[in-house]
Length: 218
Image 1: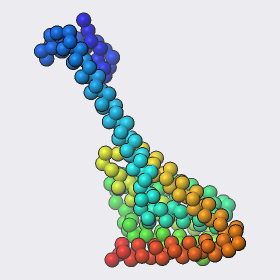
Image 2 (image 1 turned 45 degrees about the vertical axis):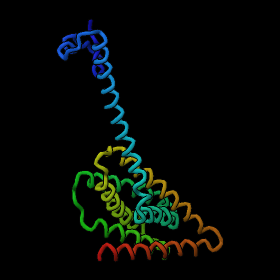
Image 3 (image 1 turned 180 degrees about the vertical axis):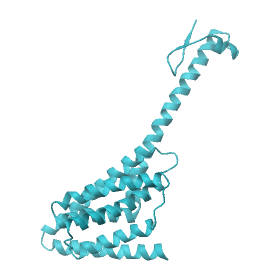
Image 4 (image 1 turned 180 degrees about the horizontal axis):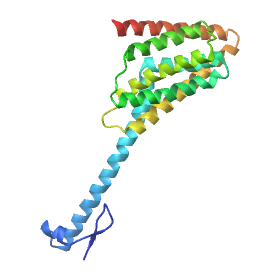
């Protein structure tokens, strides 16, 4: 009589359970069930790590006020600038953020990350406040640099038990949602006094960014 291995599906010789002292039929059945349970537990653990990494990545941008404000600000500024930057900025930021995240996960250091993140909130807030019509290349370069810094911070804060791929997917999706929220806020400029509301939001972001920067440098 042979018993199937739960890992490979190949025959498990009777000699294995017998060597363990399992000579009865019930003992051999119990041995097989234990192997099946161990295989299922390992599979469940893998799924748990993946799911946990995704949720961690999804929550990370919205639980840090600096990340949240910067990502919403990118969407607002894109809406203020209009096409093609309306969609270019919310695409460039996550793409470069993934690159920065890979650097962070790999443990490669970047200078001035935390201060740079605070500075991104300050400068984006000022750009919204001033309704700055930046040239396309300048706007893309700024947002790309900010994306790398934010991504690096995400990557270095990857939980030890999380799947890097799932974690990255989570924070990219959350970032996209925050950009869309910012674009929606930016559309308020079309309403009566909407432009003033947008400028007030930019001013509040600039104040928050200034406070964060002072805190980081202190």
